[in-house]
Length: 61
Image (cartoon, rainbow, N blue to C red):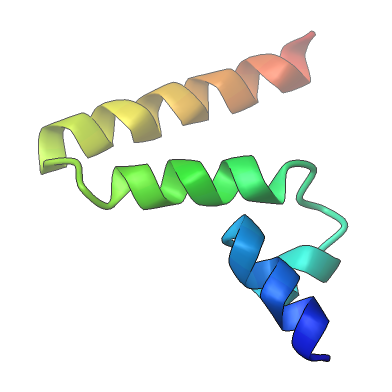
């Protein structure tokens, strides 16, 4: 169990994210979330708008 928790810590993900099969890139997603925490409200809104637009375009293709 210790080794598993060490791996999660090393990759910067939670045990829940490790086992969540719906997350294709848990490490990359955690990096984006970590970086977004330092953004101001305006920049964070730009990221939210962009991800919303990209997600909607994914389902149109």
